[in-house]
Amino acid sequence: MNLTRVNEYHHEDVDQYRAVGFGLVVFGALFAGYAFLMLLSVPLTALGISCVVLGATTVLIPESPIPASNIRSMIKGSFLNIEALLEEFDAEERCVYLPPRDGRVFAYAPLKAGHGLSNVWQAMEAPIRVVTEVGGEPARAL
Image 1 (cartoon, helix red, strand yellow):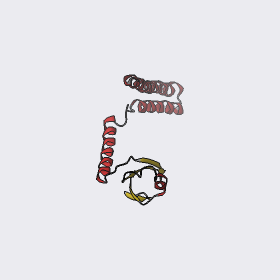
Image 2: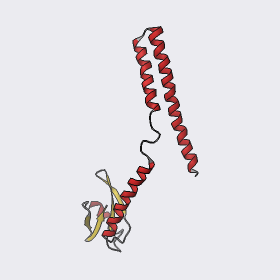
Image 3: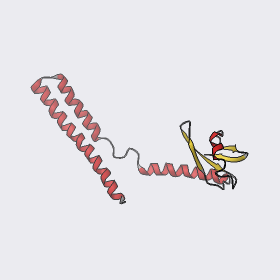
Image 4: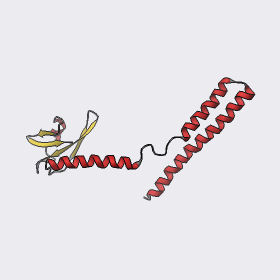
């Protein structure tokens, strides 16, 4: 899949939002002026002004609220922290993600070789701490 095409498609969506925003601004300004000067209607004038405000707000929405470089650096920082913890405890087996508990995601990382998947069911009920014991063997909760 060509990433430039995906990014171009995304920019087309943003341009559509801006076009709708500019359309609301123009329509609201014309409608508010007509309602105030010709129809002498305060509620319709307020409707036109609200269209202007809504259109201006739509135009001012940024393309990307959080820059992608910031997101990458946060993810990279979290990986480095987890990698340092696993190296400190000399983990030898693969981690296994556990079902979410209390709205958080946890992983089971056995610290001794050969006890990887045999204790996963017991790890689901184990207390969540930095180092816990599952089936008599030490394990790491991430």
